[in-house]
Image 1: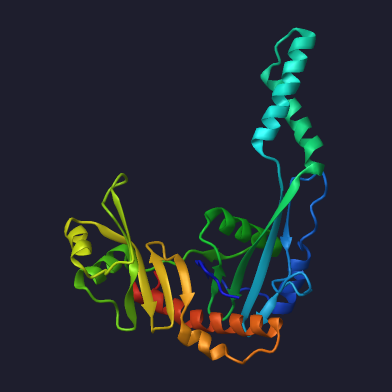
Image 2 (image 1 turned 135 degrees about the vertical axis):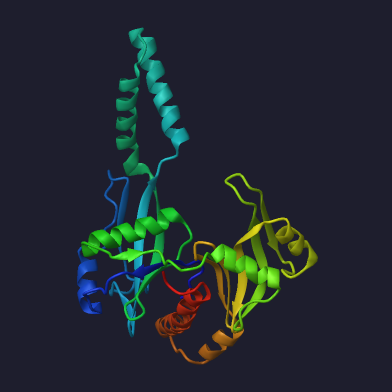
Length: 299
């Protein structure tokens, strides 16, 4: 259980829930298989997989959730071809043009007829609530997936007092200053990925990978006035990641020194899952507040 991309939210109010009451809330919107004539189905499912029953996997004050979304797959080209055939038959037999409104009604009827035979695509999104630290951490960099999970959680809980983290100093300006100085903060090191952007809405973007970020080429871009919008960092030789100007974390990777602590520590898949989740959230509980400090603390 290792997250790969983090979209972060702060809990602006304490959640008036414990793990047991949260699980009861999730049960009200537990996943149900998609009916034959319904295009999609969304609900909470056990994070440990199909053989598990608990809708929350709890480790101390860290609560892992999993949202499952099933969608019927109806390619637009299939619907359009079937619609074109029906329209052609009507126009030939009745010698009249099919108007836009009638085409829309025919399209809706076709979708209704084809849905029971459509294949189903299933996807899962994970997040965890850190009640003690005041975080909601979503394992996705996709705005659509993040909104889908947070909106479902908000409907499940009736309210969800969260907001993106806000800091006192501009992350882009601070990260740019690090590269200009050629030195990361004391407990960090530069990785080999960065993105630099010129000012203005139509400014050029330079993406670098596998490169010395203190080298002459990067320096030339900085001297030309570009700012850092994404930066690869390594924290305490334990976690590597790419941080962007909105404080989203991508390409999250827990390094060997972290994984070594799991050796011979789990005797089953469930025990390994639990150990990995506890280790991951424990490391992030230390890293995330440190990131806020780097940019002057919370605004």
